[in-house]
Length: 66
Image (cartoon, rainbow, N blue to C red; front, side, top):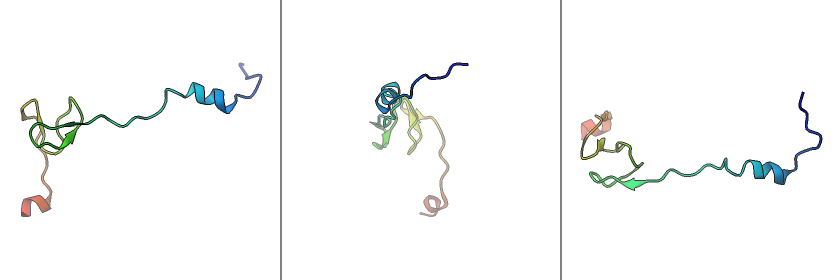
């Protein structure tokens, strides 16, 4: 069974994990409602993608009352 001969230092451990950092998702402006959205995704605010209504969003009771 493979067992390490020496302890791995913190520096070497960090070098191995250097590509595992999390990045924030890139955002762009929705051309329909001008809210930030992820590229190549339907807008979570209005549901538009590619100039047309792609998904129907459920309305909350607060929005329906006003």
